[in-house]
Amino acid sequence: MAAKQQTIYELSIVPLIKANPFETAQESLTYFSNLKKALDTLHTALGAQGWSGTVSYSSVYRGLKSRGWFRHIFVVEGVRYFELKITTQILNPHLTTLGIDEMPTPRKRY
Image (cartoon, rainbow, N blue to C red):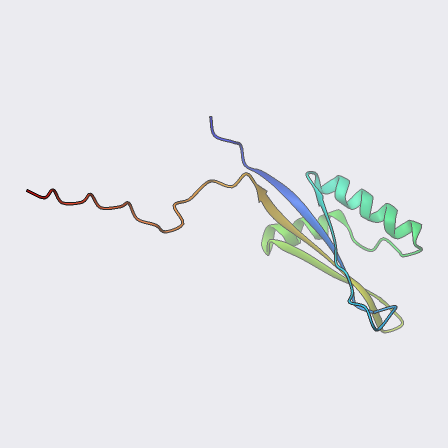
């Protein structure tokens, strides 16, 4: 029996401002199997840190359906602080042959 494919959502937070100029900004990745739960978690985290929850479910859903990704940059007084990216990923993708043809059978030698 083949494994069932499932769509999961990759939520990525990319900091655009470095608190310490000598270290590299680390991207934060989180995966969810349910888009509503992903946005609920995002709104909870944004609210806990004092950010407004300007990301709506319908805008994310429409962006994912039309482009396959959603992006929102959080800006305060003209300064870009971080970028939110939501993309879909396929869990258990169908296996392919990777473009490799079948090996030809060797000729018999007499």
